[in-house]
Figure 1 (cartoon, each protein chain N blue to C red):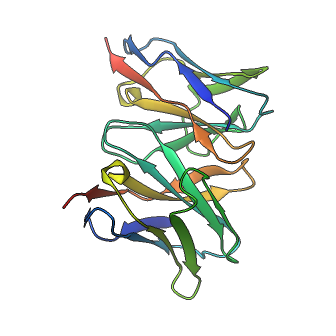
Figure 2 (tube, helix red, strand yellow):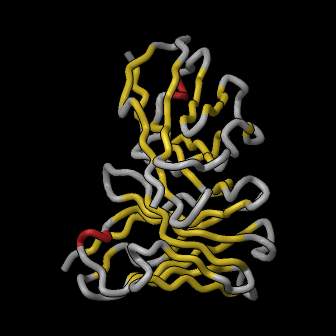
Length: 119
Length: 107
């Protein structure tokens, strides 16, 4: 079955760029939308944005000026870059598959990766 | 942005109880509403999509319904593994937004 795995640095300095990759295994990245969601410690879920395998993107306006999501179909991966990070960006970051046959629900999630912004 | 308001924020219940969680949207979202369960330290898991459709593999004690802009998640015969946080999410428009969550705790 399809599985997702996030990878990237667990510690990022303030003002630098957070970079994460999600590797899709057990299935193709094609024909689906793929998303990033984050969760600050002890808080709720925030949608960051999504990308179609073709490269079409849609971002949360609250983060749009700092976010880039990209896809590499040859590696079955998609990535997140978040620039100019602050302590408010400290969170668990999840990648997830969006199923447009299920009103765009996130039906498969990665285990999540904790990213701390600190000097 | 569409605001999603869950109630209650937390509740205490016993094994075997029937539990109801409500999620209200700030405007009409048709049936573009999903429910997720999140156990401590784990990723969220899709339970219900399109307001009332049970995700494959999810026990039938979970059900969802809608009345106008009010959505309900019901857990009948609460089991020990159901003690978790539950989130609603609208996918009617961007940005996709979640409710603040409801924590179901053991009484």
